[in-house]
Amino acid sequence: MRYSDPSRPDAIVWPSADVPAPAFGEIVITRTPGRVEVVQAPQRARISLAVLTAGCQHEIRVQVNKIMLAEQVVYAVSGYDQDTACLEVVLVEDRRQK
Image (tube, rainbow, N blue to C red; front, top):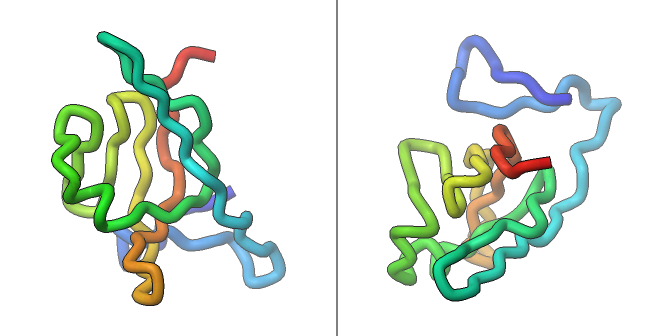
């Protein structure tokens, strides 16, 4: 479970130092003619800055500190890994059909 820190509404904070954050997972998106589907959306992931700048505006929307993928899942930026040039993100909304 995660919650927003009232003093920093844009920050994602884990409930306790005793509860480790989940490991980083891999986001999997498939593209077929006329359809883009988010197949796998882990709780925590890294998104490469190269992917964000690759010109996939119809599949990736960035607003302030949130990233929406294919109109199906929304991630909040929680950090930056300068060694890999990736944003660290946590899943905040999953709009995929269950």
